[in-house]
Every structure is written in structure tokens, then in C-alpha cells.
Image (tube, rainbow, N blue to C red; front, side, top):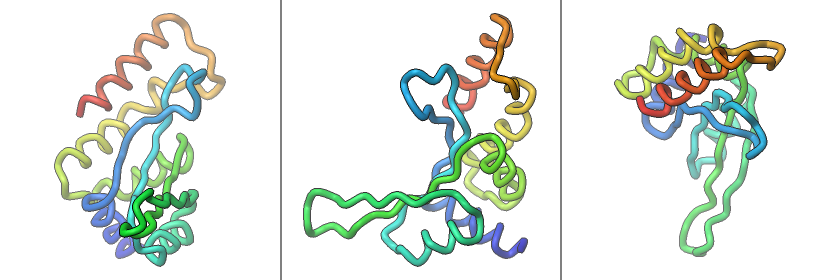
Length: 134
């Protein structure tokens, strides 16, 4: 399995994104998301089979372009667990720093019940800004 994690890290380093996103405009806070976009459907299917998540197909407007596929894994449980396992294998400095920061701080600023005091909200927003600026 460590070979699969190392391979995934290489794919994330080259074609992937580690970020925080909102599901809707009404969400107060962003969630962890790891995604990979690629035109190779076999690669995207393998990512979903091995690591879970979902696949989205994006047909580009101009017919000369290939169809692009995006594998995404979201949320604290799945995405954070995956980041903890794949981070040691990441080589692109910016992505590794972002992943390490998320792994180190996400749990301490995230409340399981979704209820935040004003100070906790400020800490959560400061965390989000820090991640997005890395």
C-alpha cells in the first residue's frame, strides 16, 4: 500500500490540488479537498477504487480538447485521513507544506458539532486564510 500512496503523491504533485472549499455559499467554513484532474479515465477510476471519493466529468467546449475527469475526496474524515497517509511522500514543497499545515491544525480548529464561539470562529477563519496563502 505504501507504493500506492507514493504513486498517489506523485500524481498529486503533478496534477493535483490540496485546498479548502465550500460546498455552497451558505457554508460558514471551508472543508478539506484533495483533487486530481486528468484526461486519463483509467487513472481517475483507479484513484476512486483505491482511495474513495467521487469523479466528475468535464467536457470542454471546444471539440479538439479531450474530456477531462476530476477525482475529488472531501471532508474531514476521508480527506484528512488521506492527507495524513500521503503527505510523507509529497515532494512539491508548496503542496507538502499545505498538507502538513492542514494535518497539524485542522482538528484543533474544527468542532465536530459545528458550534463555534466567536473566538473559535476567528481561529477557524485564520486557519483557512493561512492554508489558502501557503
